[in-house]
Length: 411
Image 1: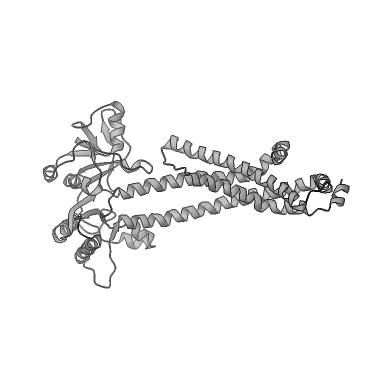
Image 2: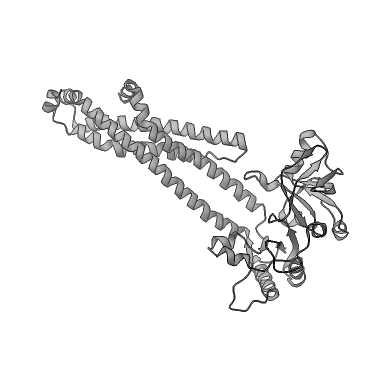
């Protein structure tokens, strides 16, 4: 009977469920995008390794704590000498690498014959880049300590520039000459593709740190606008991470001349710290999603209530006939409540299909990761049915309370 009523008023039913469709579409579509982004970002963070320690001038750790950005920018730069001091003085540390240009200070296009890439980060690192970053080599090799020492112009491509310049043409990149900016380099290797968030984390090329200092200038002072290094360390496997963190912090505080009552003027981040920051961010985003979707569902629910009130008025004689033939209050109540739930559930199903389609379309067009867990469909359908029950209760109760004699006399 509920479906027959909806089919009898197609236009009115369609306009009624529009608000519900928009609300459920936003829930399912945004959940697909946020969950996909969340899953990919967590995979990328985990790929850094549970014991890897990052020391930086500014990171998400200090930014998420609400520190003043101008104050953070006045912090001293980290230098190659800081990394060497940690390598020499920290007994718990097995591997130390230092990255120059990782913060976007040096960006160039890579050219090969008539092809070129978009702007990429040019990172200066040591031969230990792959060891601390846990990115294996796909083709060729990484540059050696000898090439680092002699400032050789060799380069290891991230996956994206390799894909743009060589893979699409079916070429082997190892041994090929490319230009990074205006300087010619020899490709010695290609790194594997990393877990994807939106694809641009593979937009980089790695060159020897010493070569990077010659071309882009070394960090000779502790002060300067953004010209800083990122130090990455990995402790020995049998060493507790907290012990390694304490040693690194002590060495850096001594080098920066900090007193006991002074806060660190550098950030130390680990995988756990980065994940905690992202947890706070993702929780806030999800809360905003719930609020926006709830507004759309409330608007849709008010529309359902209005239409059901009109329907009760139009069908007053029908209600009177049903009651005169023996229908009880709960049966009339259930009839109109069922119509309301069916109406919003149809809107929920349409919203689920539309939201999933939008997520898949965005993924196909841009490569943005998506996730469509079954519970997002269940939540969407549950929300839509709940809206039908909540906003349909008043009209259904009004119909059930009608006096049969007055209803039969209604014109």
